Structure formats: structure tokens, C-alpha cells
Amino acid sequence: MPTPPSNAAPRFGLIIIGDEILSGKRADKHLPKVIELLKARGLSLDYAEYVGDSPERITATLKRAFASGDVVFSTGGIGATPDDHTRQCAANALGLELALHPQAAELIRQRMQDLAKEQGSVYEADHPDNQHRLNMAVFPVGAEIIPNPYNRIAGFSWGSVHFVPGFPVMAWPMIEWVLDTHYPQLHQTAAWIEQSVIVFGAMEATLTPLMQDIERRHIGIKVFSLPSVDHPEYGRHIELGVKGEPARVAPAYADLLAGLHRLNANLGPELVQK
Image (cartoon, rainbow, N blue to C red):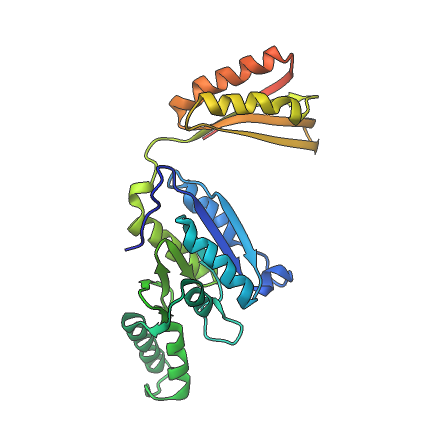
């Protein structure tokens, strides 16, 4: 079973692999979806990285992920074509060998048998194409599979780093399965809200000491500052707020407003997001 992070507030990361994303041939859809999947469970994404199909860069990125102890999802590059480097890079990052995973291999064989029946042909286990497809069941030694409900070609986990295909129709239910199967204890049962206020004419540098003071005095609260220069309704402004559990947000937001009044800030509408 993947090892959960040891800290009380686990971090979640996302690695999106593929030249097609960086070249603009395909638009990334994983980042907003993973944010959505985490948010539905009261969790949040801490960071995301985009990496092209460079084995050296992928290996370095995965080495950091394995060492971090974070829950990290990696999308893309686990197929069996020459530009699919992720499985080998994961093994290199771990200093392990690759090996055929028996359960993953059996799922691929079942998939090929079903396709042969649908096409009215005979499944030939030794056919070069079918042998080549088994490469998608080759994972770093010690990996566990992530079931793929779309076509049964599994992804894999090693520790708290989880590898899924680049195709959203496969990746997204697989990520959900990981979150609900391995990390239900991390789901936040309490509600999570954001409360903020529009601040006109202020500089972030002026507001920073107040933000630091709020986070120091209110444990579990995150303070955020979102400046805008051309908002269609508010024009140039800063949205300043706090987010966290409702019981923690209320006193922190009250202190934030009090601090803004002490700074004689020009305040606009107040916003709440649940």
C-alpha cells in the first residue's frame, strides 16, 4: 500500500509529462481536473510541474517526487512507444530494475483476448504485437497497480507517487480510485471556505506584514493575495482573504479586517466561497 505522508498536513503534487503539452499540440486538462477532484474531498493541490519527453529531466523530477514524501500524481509517458519514458525513468530515479508485473500482464492479456473476440479473430499470445503490449505491464520492482476501468491497462504506484496515462478518460477515474482507496483518511470531512475582501489602492508590500501576522496567529489558516490590474468590475485591486475550516476562518478574517482598518485601506465588497 502506498505510504501516506508523515506530516499532519500532506502536500499533493502533479507532474504532467509530454512534449505535446509544451509544444501546444494539446492543451493540458489535467491540472484543473485534479484540482477539482482534490477539492471534492476537501483537499488542495500544492504544486504542479510540466515536463517534456526528456529522460534526464523526467528522472530528476521523479527523484524529487519520491524523496518528497508527498502524494504525487504523474500523468503520461507510460505507454509502449519510443517516446514513453516514464516507467524507465521511475526505475532509474529509484535505483531499481524494471520487471513484468504479473497482475498487470494478465489484465493486458484479458484485454487482448476480448479485442480478438470482438474482431472475430483468434488471440495469439506469442504474436509480436501482443508481446509488445506486455511492455505496458513492466514497472519498477515493488510497484502496485492502479486499475484502469477504461481498457484494463493498469497504471502503477510506488510509495506515494502514482503513475497514470495521459488520456483524461483513463487518468481521471484512476486518480479518483487512488484518492478513495489509499487516502480516505486524508479526506477533510469539515467544510472548507474562503473569505476575502476587495482592497483598492493598496500595494502587496504594504499588506505583507499583516498577512504574515494572520498566518502566525491563526494556525491552519492560509492567507492569499490576488492582485488584478484590469478586472471588468473592480478595476485595479487586490483580493485579500483567508481560507480554511469555517471555525478557523471566522476569527482570522475578523483580524484581517481589523488590520486593514488600521492601515486605512479602501475596502470594497466582501466575498465568500465554499
